[in-house]
Image (tube, rainbow, N blue to C red; front, side):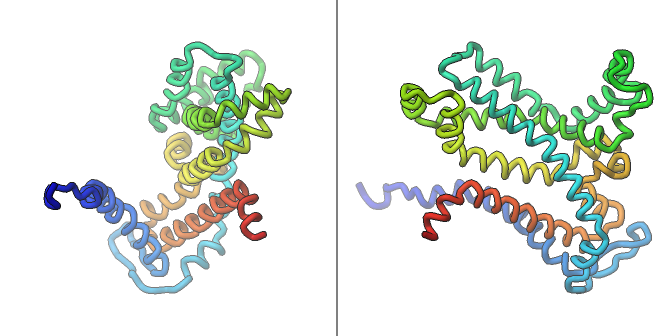
Length: 308
């Protein structure tokens, strides 16, 4: 065979991935770098967007303003609280369902149907979820009226006017939307474990609890790390559900105001591009730091072996 007739796989591989690289550079990398660049500039519009100020280099003034105002930490705290309220039960229930569906002892029938039903909420738009919950738990909504009539809550109670009930409903929506996806990921991780190891432990007399904590859970670390990091990134970017559910106000006393809603207000209302860039950069650093902390926590034994 002549050299000309040979297929250059490297060349074709580069051609296939080039569209992704071009789209990523234009629509992700360039905006990311420009956000970081303008965070060091005074750049905003005033008089309803009629007059542009800047961009004028002002060093770390935007970052100092973010830390001194205090809004960033308040809204970031709201975001983390609602993420934890939704993610912790999501992880626990998803792990229990994954163990249930992958159990060879139970051998549950119709697993494909259950998987489809669990994943279906993930296909529903967040806006539809928010409007549905807003109608159900409004002061005159069907769920609220049912709770009133059953005496479970007093007539003066309002889900949408209380800080923690608003946070709880937003966390519940995030839980319902994503627990099916988490369950499927954990099921894939459990099915990837060599079943002979689990069977050997059971033959040696290990209980189900011992098998889970000594074999399944340690081998699930890569999947759990992936689930936690991706959930954290998605939780920090929480925007559509709280925006629609609270009408953009952030709920009572802005208890459901997320950091992405704050950035959106800076960009759309006051058009403070420099300040929004500083907030985005700080958010990126914090999210990356927490993700690295998760990575170290799940791989600390390997790090200790390398140091030793």
